[in-house]
Structures are given as structure tokens and as C-alpha cells.
Length: 370
Ligand SMILES: C[S@@+](CC[C@H](N)C(=O)[O-])C[C@H]1O[C@@H](n2cnc3c(N)ncnc32)[C@H](O)[C@@H]1O
Image (cartoon, rainbow, N blue to C red):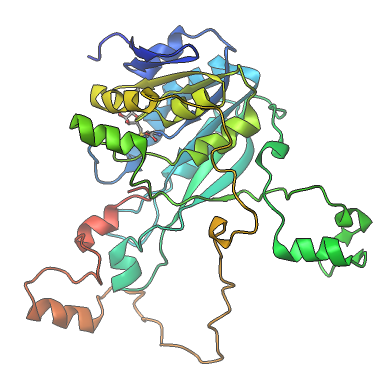
């Protein structure tokens, strides 16, 4: 039995609680939370060290949380859930649990899907190695789904809080003018598109590399001899939604706090916050986030002309050169390529994995978030 939730650390604006978030949720007043911002343990076909739930049991496990999320949210509130997918064990096919979760939340608990977002991690390694780099029958899995749910169809929100610099093409267009006309798609591109609004409305694809390696948090964990949380999200992810969906002074709640990234960002953005985590070791490290002055700044304010602030996505056709390409494997890749089988015989017997240190078996079941 887990012990009664207790405040582990607090600031003027927020608190970290150690315990089961279901108990904490039950103690909150109905309608008292403005934003739930969280990344729950992902459903996995192979368990990870922080106690993930088996993908097949995930929906049943989540139901009591879903009920409480809906109860504690204000009518103008949102729940944002970052959740990676999983691969079926030993198969180049995807589990459906994160889609089932979304459908359950909407159809059984009355949430609205305000918008689906996709967090692309440009620095993701090519996994699962067996399907991606060995048999070459899938592409790399580098996107997490982020479900933005709301209690009513009209949660408070403004995209003006998350604007992006105009692309060079748009800047050229604004400078040189544009001929208003109907596009082949039928969209009427009117004169209004010539108006310089100062910045662009972003798409629902968010590009953030998950490559934190020298942060205050990591140095703190190292100095204190603590293990850093193995599945942190980058601060920009909660920051995006906290900015867009809440105001200073609002209450942000993270029921699966991990290393309390949500709390740190909320503190910086002057929101009130409550972060709940079951495992004390993660909270020990999380305290490090608050051991320095947290200043409310636009930390990432950057130069829109600096190429380093952008990720470039190639057009898929760049390398299509009219050639037919290699023949497709007639069995869909069921048999490992002959070259890999021969290499395996000649070597130590370990499966070849094209530079990826993990065994093919592990790679098959590794979830989207490493
Ligand atoms: C994916 S991690 C969250 C990571 C976090 N977003 C971060 O960036 O550090 C999920 C966390 O939920 C915690 N957890 C799982 N069940 C919980 C529960 N019932 N109450 C509180 N925390 C729970 C796990 O221990 C794990 O640390």
C-alpha cells in the first residue's frame, strides 16, 4: 500500500507531493485546476525501471485518473497528455493503446479533443533498430502524440502566446507582395495574407530535441549522487502549453511529475503548481531544480535570422531520381536479410544491429521515449 501523500517540497507558488496522485486528485476541489500538464508512464510491452503499465492493461489503469481529471478541471480548463506509442513485442507493428486512451477519454469521460499535437524529437536515434536499420521495413519512430483535451469545446487558449518567426518565404512574400487568387486546392488566398502580423501561427507539430546533457538539474543529480529521471520531457514542451492555455496565477497540476519539469516551468512563468510523484528518489533530484533563483524570462528568446534556431525537414522527393529502387522484400521483411544472417554466423552470435548497441529484441520493444 502506498503511503498517504505528503508535501515533499514547496515554494510560494507550488508544491511537490510524494504519493499516489489518485489520492491527491480525490482531495482536490471540483473545478479547481486550470491545466493538467503531464506525461504519464507510457504503456510498454516491456517494463522500464519507473514502473510502466503494460500496454494491454493501460486503459483500465487510466480510468480512475480520467474520472478525477474531468472532475478537478475548471470548465475553461485543459488536460495535455504527452504519450509515446509502443511496438508490439517481436512485431513490426504498433500497439494501439495511446489511441484507445484518447477515445476512452472522449467517449467515456466526456473530454473534447481540442487538438492533437505531435512532438517531433529531431535527435531521435533510428529505432526500433531491428525494423528500421536491420530489416529496413519501417522508418524511425521519432514522434510522440500530445493529446490536448478540454472539459468543454471552449477551453481558454490563445495561439498568440506561441507564435513563431515567419519563414523566409513568408518574409519575401510580405516584402514583395502577393497576387490574391484562388489556389488549386480551392482556398481563396485573399489580400489578408499580405498583412504582417509580426509572427506566424505555428503548426501542431512541435520540434524539440530531447538532448539535455548539461543542465542545472543533471549537474545537481550528479553532485548529489542521484540517478536522473530516465524519461524526462524537455522543458519547452510543457512551457508551450502552459503559455498557451493558462494565465499567471492559474493552477497547473502534474499527476505524474517525475523530475518536476512542469513545476519548474510553472514557477518560472508565475503559475501556481502541484506536482505529484510516487518515487521519492525522483523528488530528491527534482528539488535541485529549485536550488537556484528561478527568473521569469523568455529563456529561449533567440534570433529569428539564426539558422541554428530551426530544424529543416527535407522534402520527401529530394532523392527520388526515377530509378525503381531495390525490390521490396516479398515476405514483408519476415526473414532477416541474408547479409545480416551471415554476419551473425561469422561473429559472436549476437544479432547485428547496424551501429545500435541494443539487441534487436530490446530494440523491438523499446517505446518511443528512451
Ligand atoms: C514519464 S514519467 C514523467 C516524467 C516527467 N514529465 C519529467 O519530465 O520528469 C512518469 C512518472 O509518473 C510516476 N507515477 C506513476 N504512477 C504514479 C501515481 N499513481 N502517482 C504519482 N506518480 C506516478 C512515475 O514514477 C514516473 O516518474
